[in-house]
Every structure is written in C-alpha cells, then in structure tokens.
Image (cartoon, rainbow, N blue to C red; front, top):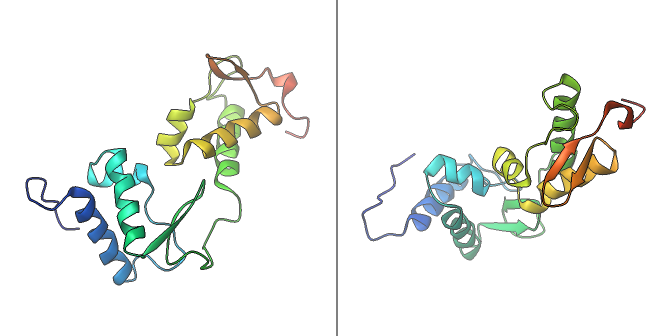
Length: 162
C-alpha cells in the first residue's frame, strides 16, 4: 500500500478512496464483497471515523460501491448479489458473547462490552451492536439497566437448551 501524503494538497479521504479503487481494479476486492468497514479503515490508515465515512461517500460518488444500511458498503452497483455471511453479523456477535459467558470470561451480574466497545471491536454500525444486545436480552443471557448498561444474567435465567 502506498503511503498517504498527509501534508499535500489531496485530501486524505480521496487518497484512501484511490487505494481502495486500486484494490478493486486489481481484483483484490471483487464485486459483491464488502469494502473495509469504517473501523477497519480507521485502524489501517490511521484516519478518523468521519474521514472513513468520506471515503465511502467518495467511492459511491465514483460509482464503485453501494451502501446497505446496517450491513455495510459493497463493491459494485446497488442490486448486485452480495457475498454475505450465512448468518447476520449481529447473530455472530451475540453468539461470540454467549461463548464468552459460557467460558466464564463474562460473569453473572457483570457488564458485557458497551455498544461503543462492540462497534469498535467488530467494526459494525451502532444498529448492529444494538441488535446483538437485543438478541442476548431476548434469549435472557443478559439484562439491561437503563443508563448503566447490559449485564450477564444469573445462570438459572439462561436459555434451557444451553
């Protein structure tokens, strides 16, 4: 990957968009595949979240990608078949947290990671993190205390088939 010119006249978001455009042209990112998430771009290019948002906007302006709310930004025009996981991302996140609860990493009456932490860790939008926590609550793995967070339920409240 070429180094970004942080002192030059070309905005950083345009430079990052060009790097991703090169990856698309070289076939490293194929039609239907997700482009790097905002969180991934932040880490990979050492840019802010708003700059990462501008990268996606620039790629859309160039008609190289399309964005599906809550799912991500994908290579190609709207309507192309997306290469997606067999399970929704929020389900994978919820399952990951259940695994951590079962292992004892997350203990009863102790907080699970916040929405912000989940967004950072998994590189997902707030709506996706919220869906994961909601699923955990519906299955009774966690309970939520307004303004305090979500906490691991007592084992007797966990789903019976666990």
